[in-house]
Length: 142
Image 1 (cartoon, rainbow, N blue to C red):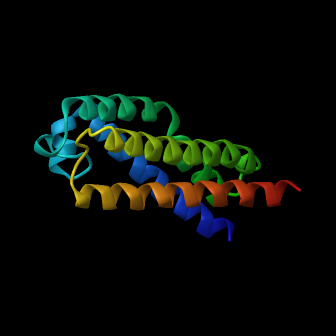
Image 2: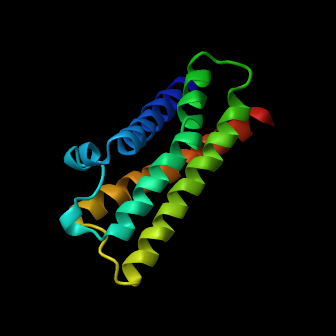
């Protein structure tokens, strides 16, 4: 179970981190790759928020891939790093969902239905993996 959880944490974590790294360095490329919403479907305020979020995420999203690597090598610190990574993941998913709901309720154009499906799918996966990593780490520590 440790190896499977480590692989999931590593893959999902790297996916999010690399996506946000691309968005931070070259936002138009991220849009072309489908990592960010297109200009014609969003308002400038939303794009600015997404860019700022991507830049901040580089400071915190490295924790989930690190937890995954530590799980794969069964390092003694993996449960502690996993607790932090799980918390970051759950917070990220919840914060982003709250931002989307608030902007949409306020009438801000934030992308099309395809964008919403991709966003919600990734946020649900992030929240689920974050919660699982926390529970898994706590089970190991008790």
